[in-house]
Length: 382
Image (cartoon, rainbow, N blue to C red; front, side, top):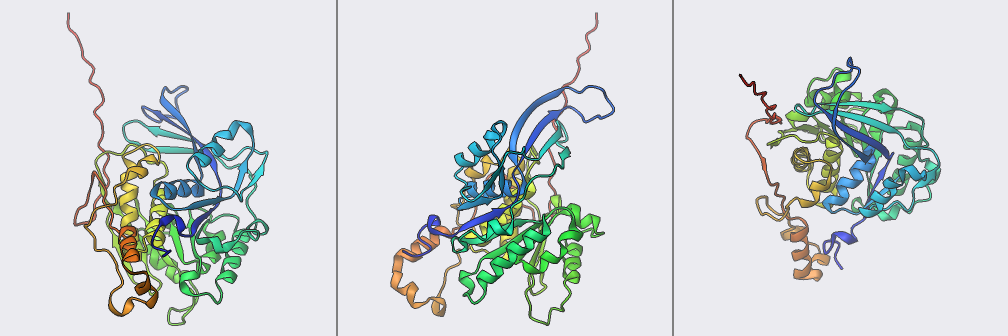
């Protein structure tokens, strides 16, 4: 059977990192000077960057495995139940009796601005020794969180050793999410194929735009570009301005944001962006700029809904974008042997995307929340 005949036969995406717990509560207005505040509602969520990315990828239709340390504490059984319910493979995870890291996210009702209170407790992290036990032939893409630099470096080296001597199509793609402690993980950048830099990290480095961030990362790579060595593609999501990206050759692209009619939930939008990019680049085989554009649209779509379940309802069956098919000399003898079946399956797999209820403007768009009007107080007269 051709590799294009089913997404289910494609290699899995491995997400390496932590799984945490978030308690999200909504109040009228954040006021930490007050002794008491009344909450509107509250929900408990499985979270963590790799955990969120794996959830979004699974909802988009990719085969996903989560590789990390999970808690067997009965209080947090909901984490394991949710992972199993969504079909995320955790067969190679290690377990501990410790409680996972915990965050409280306070969200204002009208502005949807979030205040995060993070419990930065020590928690076990996966090691290169655990990673060495994996059969890397099962994976086509591995996404790392930028934490535990020594262990992450050793794990990436194992992938590079695995890729050595293999054809491009058989190599594992490595991506890295950098969200804090930039100075500690800077040496990991040159080892990856794709690097995601958050707006927060860029601003702490003095980079005030996606382009400045991409150029800043480019300058940090020690070897000049004319020396052909491994260089990553850099992706910098920038909230309402969309995202910027730079190819390995140094070509910069800036993709504007999509407008969403109403912002309901900002929690996890950056992880949703990462997952959508991986899906577009790996599963759908889109080029860098096209994958970033898709990630912008999916992240904006998610803002209008609570949680990630909305991603399972995305319609991707329109024909607005051209389907990338091999023509002429690009068709190999293997392609000819497979005939119409492969072409039909490939056309279905690479069909363009459609995003309901999301508008696109020609210029750089901003995501503006539709602020609800607070109920007016009626004053009665006697």
